[in-house]
Length: 172
Image (cartoon, rainbow, N blue to C red; front, side, top):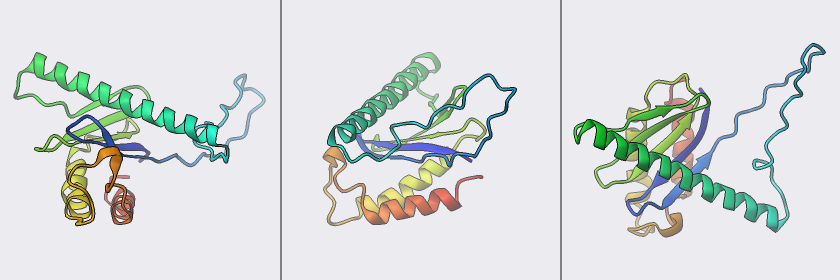
């Protein structure tokens, strides 16, 4: 399984947590019969020491978060208008990725982008909310009740538990 990214949006439409996983590149040998050149690695994933490159990477990440939320918001509203209040938006598949969506009763939105081969990961997103987010963020006495700018969400326990969950519980 290839997991691309994971986002948590609060009820105020703010992205309070985002995490990207970059797939390990597979070594490929260019063949002489291939007319296409190998695609260069993404520059957004490389670490740079210049502050302008870091600011540009953060601005791109913020734009990505806004685009993901806009996509989820639009698709969820379209499903409610076309299908009625009983229908819910679960996932969306494109040629490149599959977006999995879970909304909690408190209107927290959990979004995961994976490869297209996976079935719906809604039960796994529910487990992330119930077993990881509630345990390590909501029950954390040092974390604020609201999380402006993601303060209190990206704590070490939550990130370790999320990494362990992704590597063991999600289907391969």
